[in-house]
Image 1 (cartoon, rainbow, N blue to C red):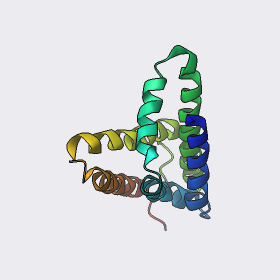
Image 2 (cartoon, rainbow, N blue to C red):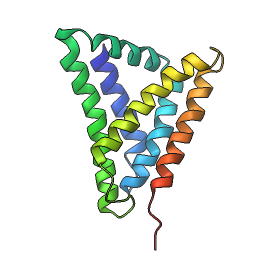
Image 3 (tube, rainbow, N blue to C red):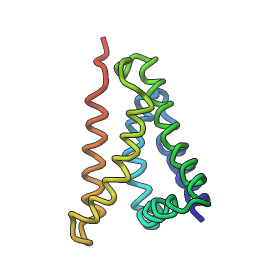
Length: 144
């Protein structure tokens, strides 16, 4: 079930974020795409939690890690391309930044569930994701 959800989410993100002409635009579109994904698929929150728990089981950990690495690799590829395009600073470690952004996204889901009342958790997540996107935008190199 988790592998199928991962496939569906990746396709959703590809259709809404990865069709932009520049890597930096694709990277910046990930946040809004994930917000839309969570609006349209309420199971996204519970599947993330289930993935975290299943990853602790020795027989299933490898599959969950591979899925997570797939997301990190996708984001790292966008960051690397944006660096080559001159849109992000070259000194940033693309793999480390990608891991931080993926972890932040998942962490914001949990944080919103803890900090916000149930009626506001989704909205809290969306607002925090917007701020995360703004942080990435702040890394953008000025164009000459």
